[in-house]
Length: 159
Image 1 (cartoon, rainbow, N blue to C red):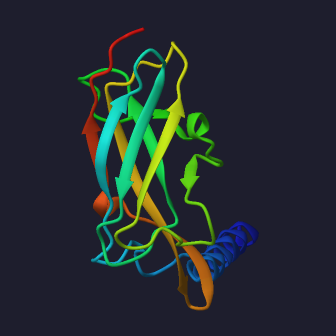
Image 2: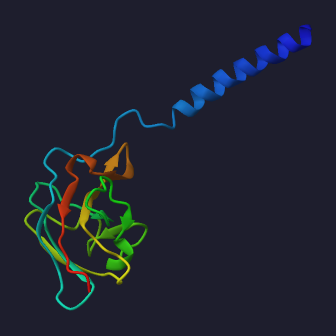
Image 3: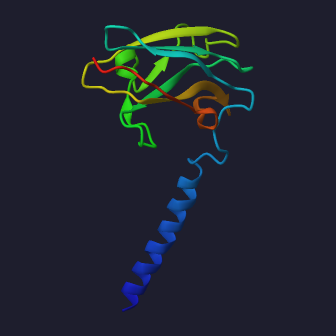
C-alpha cells in the first residue's frame, strides 16, 4: 500500500515538473499583425472564356507584407472558406508569397495574380488572410493577420 502511495505521489510531482518546463515553450503574448497593417482587394473577376480567376490586391497599410493565405467557398451559404486556392496560383505550403525577400510587398504597392482553376472548382467567395514576418525575442516568426481578414463574394459564370 505504501508503494502505491509513493508511486502516485511521484507521478504527480513528475507531472508538475514537466508541466512547468513545457509552459516555457508556449508564447505568452498573442502573435498578430501590427495595428496599421492592411490589405485591400481592388478587383476580382473571372477571365472570360477560361476557368481563371484574377485577383488584384493593394497594400493600403503602413507595414510591408510577406504574402497571404487564400481560401475559397463553393456555396453562398458557406460561412468558412475551406478550398485552398494557393496551389492554383503558384503558392507553396498553403500560402502565396510575394516576389522578393520577406515582407517585400510594401505600402501602396499593387499585385495582380491569376489563379488557374479547373472546371471542378466553383468559387462563390474568397477569403484572404495576410501574413508577415517579424522578429520577436530575436526569433523570426510568421504573423498571421487574422485581425485584417478579407472576404469577397464572387459571381463567375459556369463554363
